[in-house]
Image 1 (cartoon, rainbow, N blue to C red):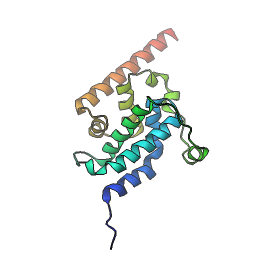
Image 2: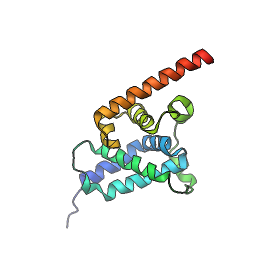
Image 3: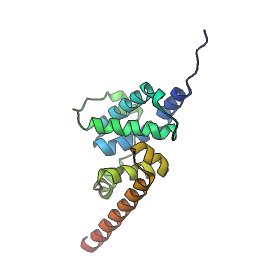
Image 4: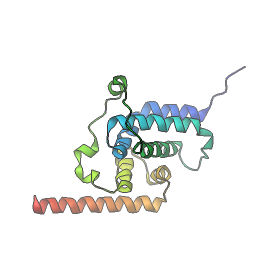
Length: 162
């Protein structure tokens, strides 16, 4: 009996291989530390694989997977940290967190912070971000505009007082 290929599973596996560090970086923005982020991304991919038949094709599969990652990261903030083995740390060495580089971004409200990360770090378009966060495209646009305004204001205040 020949084994049928599952294109959704293959695409999810490709996303895991190709974009894992990006998913971890965004999850880290939600959960606050790298170990929880790695665990959340792995949980999110497991959820995506188990639920792949639920993907209706209303947007890109990658955006649907991002939603699974964001949801898993939000869940991870509500449970105790589980240690991740050293092998995972060594295999997926990440650049320093954008949050560490910019306290201005870390000070943003959660939705604005997520939109900034998904747009500028993950490189998603507005439609994909909307799908990942389960919001309207207009909400993405407004959140990004608000984030830009908040960062500009904070920079000006820092220049005046700093």
